[in-house]
Length: 89
Image (cartoon, rainbow, N blue to C red; front, side, top):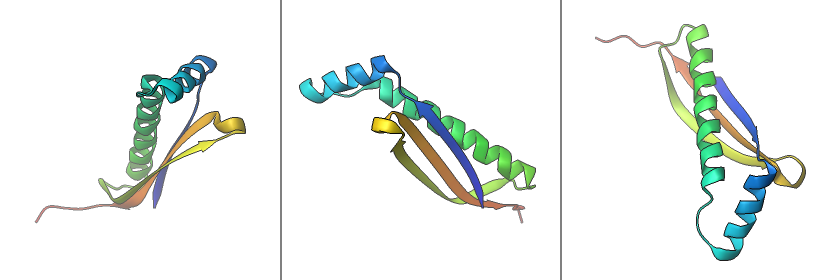
């Protein structure tokens, strides 16, 4: 099993604009960008850990998104999977 994790802090301005979006509707681009960034970091960590084990692929990937910290101020992405070494026949 290999794991990649990223925890990103949401800043005051993101929180303010997200609150406004909750009232008027629409998507929060700032939070979406942070989630995308966190996911990319977590995947990079997962890939690096797999390479360190001598694997050349990861299968059975599971991605979890969580809000953590006081008042949900942190975004967390956790990715896990099974590192494998395959060869073509």
